[in-house]
Amino acid sequence: MHAITIPEPGGPEALVWDEVPDPEPGEGEVLVEVVASAVNRADILQRQGNYAPPPGGSAYPGLECSGRIAALGPGVSGWAVGDEVCALLAGGGYAEKVAVPSGQLLPVPEGVDLRQAAALPEVVCTVWSNVFMVAHLRPAETLLVHGGSSGIGTMAIQLAKAMGARVAVTAGTKEKLDYCAELGADILINYREQDFVEEIQRATDGAGADVILDNMGAKYLDRNVRALATSGRLAIIGLQGGSKGELNIGALLAKRAAVSATSLRARPLGEKAAIVAAVREHVWPLIADGHVRPVVDREVPLSEAAAAQRVVEESGHIGKVLLVAS
Image (cartoon, rainbow, N blue to C red; front, side, top):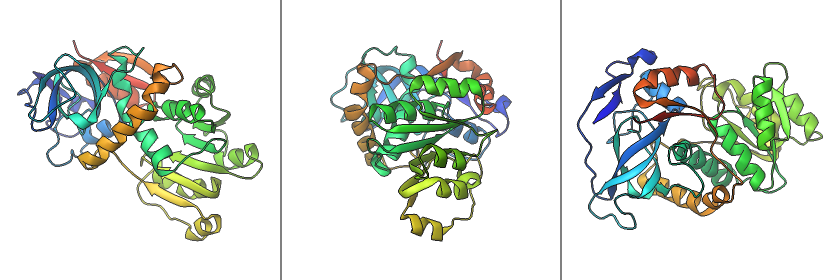
């Protein structure tokens, strides 16, 4: 088969389309013939040499895919060769085939194209696990989403609205904010022109955001704490603004607030399977009913992954950029 390899860390040109050995499904795994994958910022970090795969994981980038089951490994039940699926991966999505633990498989939701299903697993699992399983967003609460037009952001808006929450977003252009509004966002903040702390306080009559989903890390840490409501919950899922910041514990104590930081990739298989099962139970019906949908900006051939990563690296997209196998 062919896969995108990274012989040496570097820029997008470091991604090489090469012939590699086919993977073999192990105990409890299935082999998926990939129809599409999607670009995540974690893939860019891996290309740069800053985010190694977990032990035993595929060396190829790609944290999600869609496709058809080509073979079953020992001990797999409930799935059959030919089933159309999408999957949460620890790596290996930028390839023509990938071995996947069966607990990380999801059926393609009703009404979703097989290719576009590749835009779902990573973002849905990230949003559901952080916003709902960890931060426990409740109906009528306010969620602030940084990067509202991203893959994560567009999914967070839709899920929070479907659950009856009020949604605030930050984005850097009017076009992106307008799209967030189309998805249901109630409070639109241009982070290039407005202070999100002031704007969220104004929009909530001084109460603040009950939950904040943050992809920036250190750069936003102090302001995020100031933007939290009493008993607010800050969920950090990215470090685009740095990894080391000063936390005002006094402010956190005064608000009885909490900060969590999680990632999906290195979690034990059992934890990933539990998240995937929760997503299938709670989110898949919303997608089938049309309340939630994947947001895909464009499709790029898998062999041209470098071009796709450039788009994402420059934030020149809304939603997800897909990599489509030939």
